[in-house]
Amino acid sequence: MTAYRVGLVVPSSNTTMETEIPELLRRRRELYPGEVFTTHGSRMRMKHVTPDELRRMDAESDRCVAELADARCDVHAYACLVAIMAQGPGYHEVSEKRLAEVAASAGGPAPVVSSAGALLAGLDVLGARTVAMVTPYLPELTGLVRAYIEGHGVTVHDALSLGVADNLAVGCLDPAGLLDHYRRLDLTGCDALILSACVQMPSLAVVQQVEDEIGLPVLTAATATVHTVLTALGLDPVVPGAGALLAGPR
Image (cartoon, rainbow, N blue to C red; front, side):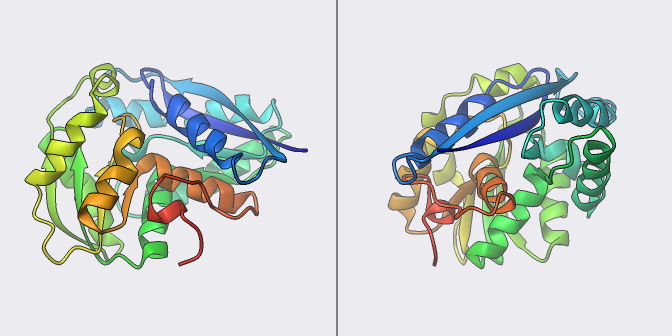
């Protein structure tokens, strides 16, 4: 039996990543029963998804990683996509490097990944150069996410903003609603669909269903984060029933 500790840096109002990531890791045990994962969270204060609150929240990430380093986590995941992307292109690399140094200085050296960087890496794994996406954000923030993804060389052909600013309300959205939301997107020429470009918008329950319906790879901030966490741990990034990104070698 091999045990792994996953540290999660999350917004204080987050209610989704601490359910979807453990569920993905639980599903993995169907294939790898000798692995045990535990998740350990530290929180950054944030109630409303606005540029000002995101900047203030991001400043707390160093403290969170230092706290998690005390638990000797094997990997840390900065689980707020828009907090990174709102800071401008390439910020995930700056943040991950700085936080890895914080973990090491606190006596618990471990790799640090981010949901923002994970989403871009996931698109690269899938070979996706043109995508559509659903976000819960106000249009201004969706625009920042779009610019960040396009700065990575991926065209966002279409994007849907649900316009929910209250982060707690985002976590209460019914994932079944995504079955209607994605149909409002123009998928012409797309290589993949980002069904939830937000760690807080629940989506895991319908990822595989939507992928089966549209015949395109479907990923989310959560599935991409788990793919990158597993990769950072040196494990095969495979989880059943969670879309093409986690389906194994392509």
